[in-house]
Length: 366
Length: 127
Image (cartoon, rainbow over all chains, first blue to last red; front, side, top):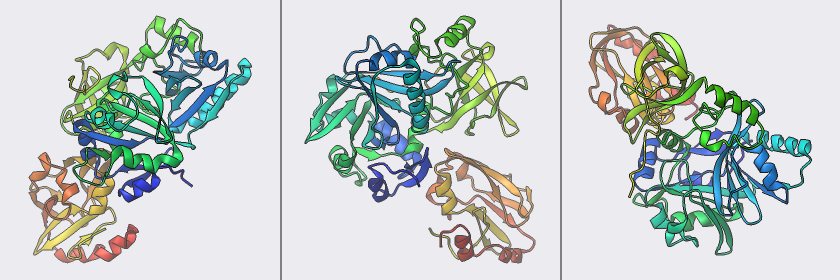
């Protein structure tokens, strides 16, 4: 039996095409991946991201625990701040990528839906091994979460939300009450656009949806629903990694270009392995590829140089905004320089692909 | 889910419409919806010979890549020129503007071996 988010009824009434995603019945699309992608870039979209895990840490030793379990330093993190971080195993492989946020009483960790059971048991194991005292509450199924993304989001929501959005900085958040509903509003996202992500009580989800987005069924509405399909093409254009594609237990964060989220000066699970990788230099690197033509490179397709395999595709799509066939791939470090011409083996036919700087898309600065 | 009764189908979601000895081939609304936004299509050239139940091309969407099959054998007489620049036409209008190729066939009666509209919808569980 698939799990349903608090927005399930909304998805059905909005005509969503529903799919199984990590055991959740989620909207793949409502009107179409490309129109939803374009609407996000030009206006605003609301995404149900309630399937993502929401774990609340509290108690005296919670910060010390998180600092040892996460690759990012959280010791100097201020209340109201969020940080992207990795959770690694001892060999430096990525168990999950997460956002850790420090609230007044809690630390909120948002993890991938597919990794929630694994990460929970990993944390419980570490807690026992380190004999640390703190509370860990899984609030995923008691709450809902939406991402509202696009250039018109801040303007549109400023008058609705009880939070001073224009002064809320990127990767910061605020918790406040809104008509008796407790909302946690983050200035963050996974689309390359400005926007917010909001955690709210599950029971209030449908009411909140009406207040936040108004009448979504109007074709001229500023904020329209978008599904997981558009979420994937948007994040790929924005060069953001997706667990299971650019990240896995066999991939370390340094090779994946995520050194900014790894603090090698502190002690954490995987630190030793990552220090040796940093010293030797990663053997392979995550790169962006632009393919000639309109064909799409798919995960695991070989990347070749002079007919010799030098890497493999992790994700690919035809970027609706950049209007190019784009992909990310792990490539041997010796062939990973920008501008290098490689080929992608698309089921037997080789398509030329050039290494380009990530991201493929950057939102215009105001 | 519509599937016009004036044509014949394969379980792999291609439709075939007969006009004399010319058969026009495309994919069904169901297939176009399943693929989601189509980004690329690879079709044979005019003059190419197509065998019955053999792959004649390939279609790609944001979500997946899929082979295209013809239920009848013949020679390609026309390829829809609009699709090269606008493959999304298949999503919007799969039964008319989104047609793919026209085949000249020796024996148009072969077509009756393929699925009727009702049988196709039954096969895909959309009756």
